[in-house]
Image 1 (cartoon, rainbow, N blue to C red):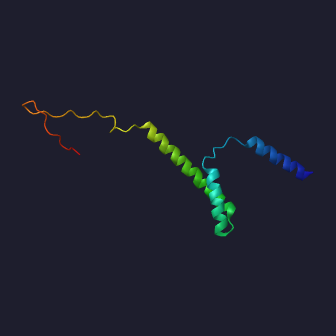
Image 2 (image 1 turned 60 degrees about the vertical axis):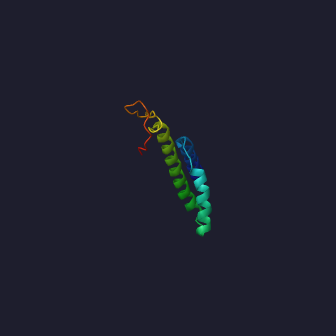
Image 3 (image 1 turned 135 degrees about the vertical axis):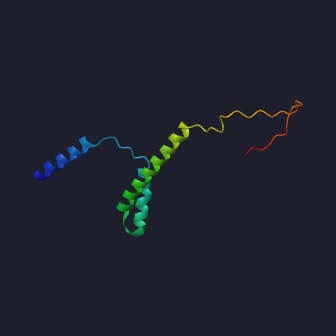
Amino acid sequence: MKLALATAVTAACLVLGSGVAEAKGCIKGAAVGGVAGHVAGHHGVLGAAAGCAIGHHQANKADRKAATSTAQPRSATTQAPAEPATTQSGMTAPATNTR
């Protein structure tokens, strides 16, 4: 009877306490880490846990990079081209490389 009650309480805690989790990168990382851990010495669970953490970190890093690249436009493409220089006689001077 105590075992049934403990199982019911545990199941209720898991169902009610679980929220929405963002697992970006975790599934792919866990699969790769699990295989690598298994091949390295039958440590598939440890490899899967480490792979999940690394995959999640890599996904967050990619999201941050994508967010900063869209938020900050490149200033070199927004500058207007320079007007050609003219001499005193009204002729256009040869272009010089300013870089």
